[in-house]
Image: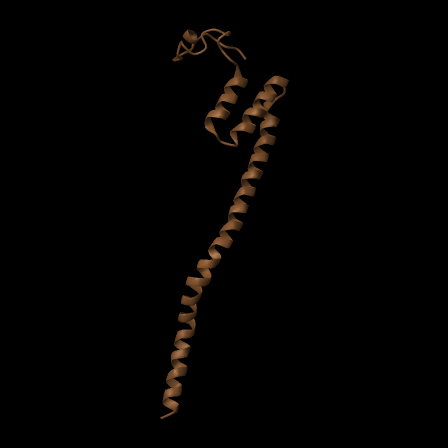
Length: 122
């Protein structure tokens, strides 16, 4: 990683990383990012990038594997939420929608049965 003095950067802030001794490195910056954001998916990303940098390995395959892992965990969370939604919608369905549907479906038939019984007794 090559660091240039802040005054040589185009549009950079001179107070940022003026010399190499004051810079803390990518690892420290990524750990700080993970701590500040409080997003669970950032922590493995930071750890993967730090490990790839420390070991000198390529980041591409590591990030692809991480993205597959994060995608699978996000899919599992979505499926779990969908299963919980099914249980939550069951009670309103039974107590509100089903009785209204029965009134609409059975109501006209019951009215015809009652009308036929009253006319038959005359």
